[in-house]
Every structure is written in C-alpha cells, then in structure tokens.
Image (tube, rainbow, N blue to C red):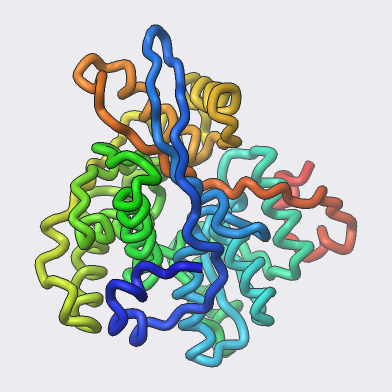
Length: 352
C-alpha cells in the first residue's frame, strides 16, 4: 500500500493518524467510448476498488474518521444518511470490523432496490437504525435518545468534515503520482458525483498541492441546501486551514489554487430519482466500459461526462471519470421477522 500524503507531508500524516482500511492506490485505466458520432478515449479512476470488502469513495474518509473514534476511545459511532445511504452502510460495516457499534440516523428517500439492500445489510450487520427526520425538535430528541450518554463519536453526513476530506487530499496526490508515472494522461476535467462535497473538496486540494490544474467537475446529486457554493467554499477553506495549522509546509493559500466547477444540470427531479440521461449513461458505461454504475450518484456523473464529450469545444479535451461506487458483490439479503423487528415501522415499506 502506498500513502502519498504520508510520503509528501509526513508531519501532517503524523499528526493525523488513520486506520488503514483501503487498498491503495486504486488503479487507473483508459478506455474508448462512442457517443453519437463521437469516439473518444477517456480515463477512469477506479475508486470502486478501494477494498475487496466494501469499496467506493467513503472508505478514504472513514480511515481518518474512524481513527478519530478510536483515539477518543468511543464504544460506537453514529452517522447520518438516507435509507439507501452507501455512506451509512460503509460506516456500519467498518465500525463492526473495528469492534464498534454503529447507529445510523436515516431519513426517507425514493424507494429503490438499492435502498432495500442497504437496509437489509445494515440489519444483518447489527447496525442500529433510527428515523432522523421531521422538525428540529424530533431530530434533537432522536440524538438525545440514541447518541447522548453512550460514548459515541459522531461522523457527519457523508463523512464530509475537514478531517474526512483529508482522505481525498491523499487521493489527489495519488492521482498526480499516477499521471507523473505515465499511467494515465493529464486530464483537463475530472467528473465526480458530489453529494456532501468532502470528496470533491479533498480531491481539488490534493491536485492543487501537486500542481495539477485539472478542473473537478462536481456533479450535484443532492438538494442544493446540502450542496451549494457557499457550503463548498466553507469546507474547502476550513480543510486547507486545518492542514496548514497542523503542517506549516502546506501552503496557507492552497485553497485559492483549487479548481472546482459545480454542475447542477444533471440533478434531475431529486435525490435518488433517475432520468433518461442518467439511465442512458448507466447503459453506455456498462456496455462500452464494463462499469457498474447506479442512478443516484455515478450515473449522473457519467451523464455529465457524456454530455460534454458531444460539445464541439471539448473535441480533444482529455477527461477522467472518477468511479465512486462500490463494485463488490454484496450478499443476498434475507430480512426475516427478527430483523424486521429492529426496523422503524415506517421504513418497512422499503423492504417490500
């Protein structure tokens, strides 16, 4: 395993320990793709392969976030998401691996097959599932009842705090090293599905530290009250400031050297709701690239890339798709009566 952040900034790595969960670096490849009358070669960063256990982009963040829980001697962690949250599932799986309990504070979303599978896996891995929605009083009461007084370390929605974003600073340095080694061409644009912005922020900072000027195309997949420019800039500046505070060799002004473009036009009708462009992108990615994508995140990011390929001004532009979706087959779920008794009653409809 190679940790490019530790190699480049050993002081920061020493002051920000992590628990090694991911198999890094993840590979890169280049593939030909045909869209309409256009045939192009695109690069792919396979962060779907961060682990043979459960991969995807969340694991890079959890290496730092779960280590903090260990350092705090927490008995359990709590986190947030929707009923189909890959972040909640990854947190529960790796918390269990580290012998910690996990409370998942979940809200409703569109009913999908993926949501049923996530809920089933959470139950089978002994996660505590709690409804976290409604008015502020209901949310505070849920936190009080299930988190307070239980020696619990709270992990934010999507793992997107400054600490979680550091995991993707490492990813940016990792990609820069692969470019330098000739494993992949230098891209001008990098397409990434973006929900809570920690991955995009960290990636952009890592690329800036390495002097790579590729523009991160942060394709919005969550409501604009969660993902917007103001929140992104706040997380970007805080992450940069905290890294500089911990390791002064990191330039104080690195945030202004980042390149992130928010892409809102592929969000469609809402979180986890698919559309024609997303469905077509998933089919093309499967048929021509051998990629397994899904409609909530990666399908929308691929739709953005395919749209841009067809624009005349991008005819020769090198592009990279960052695959954030776990590609490992998960077990068949059998949610028996015992499992269902541990589920909030209003979530049972996702299993039927």
